[in-house]
Image (cartoon, rainbow, N blue to C red; front, side, top):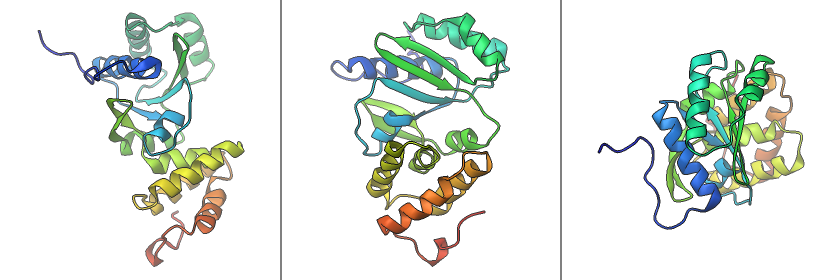
Length: 215
């Protein structure tokens, strides 16, 4: 029997989050949809630990692709997720580009493609990482930091600081600045200014070649 797409089951019991991630990765692989883990769990793959039962994924799917959306909903239901197709379709019709499903106590938000360019950046630069006992596609730390700095929540700003400090040797600072400015241009003001302040406060390595913010 041929193996199904997606990661193999890890050794031992992965728990609620691990089991949900395993089923999501398999389902998206079978649907041939690119994805990137974001939010608190995406950040956990780069050293930020926080307990959560929420899973956020950026998914390479246009909300207007009705047949593909319906196919994904059917696959998620078959994989054991609680899916409400009617409410999902009504939210998408109102321009809310999020599919929300549940499995037990775990909430899953699938963020579909947006026109602001941020999701394009997430999908183009996602990394293969081992997290929660699985091989997963995860948003790059630059994208995770930038979107947290675009938030109005102090906790997200602290998360961005922790991510920067944990990954400063691997960060592409020009791209991080470009992503923050892209979010500013899309109306999520403050990311660029907060990033520059954070870089100064953290005394992050920033040589002459990085001294001018990207445009």
